[in-house]
Length: 263
Image (cartoon, rainbow, N blue to C red):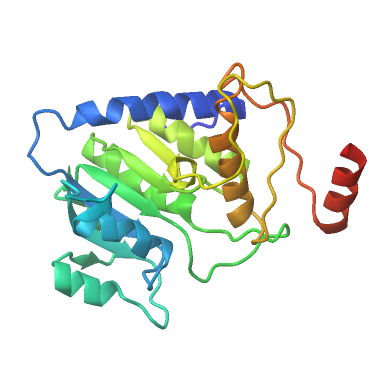
């Protein structure tokens, strides 16, 4: 069931995008407020889990108006409990039970107990690989969800915070699971949709051959956001979403030298 088939990055992204278009229709005819399960690495003040969950737990401001999330968080799985852990406080205050396993968080008696899953695998203490990437357990989290989906003969939409994995093989396999079990899956952050406050105002249809994004954060975690910033700016270009030929990472002196050569 979990066969890994070869594919390109572009075909993978196209498939994920198509799947997310289906997700809203899945809630048609169900209860008024969909039940959302949260699977996360850790919950501290202003961690990714905190920033995402706060808009699911209570009304939030959007364009100056208070908006109800229209969903209920019904269960949590928390992988780590560091100093400053807020998971137990949040659980008690908002009556969201914490379970010991992912299977218990999303199912009971071979039936799913949620209508959607938030997978937040960002922050926490995890090993680094040789490239300096944090090996967040997003792939493992989804695998455990997929095992439950197969057992229950049912599935629900999954949102994965940021990119799918630190390794292309694992990211591709996660995509394959969503295709095989036919559950919509989306991965990313809010950066491309954030309000732009910048002196750069591209005219719609502007021709763009190359673009550069500069950041001062960590490897991969901010590399990802740098690409998203670029995405949000260049999508108004001539030809719109026509794809990317190459992406090149330049660090420190090599970046300065490359940019100097282009001037």
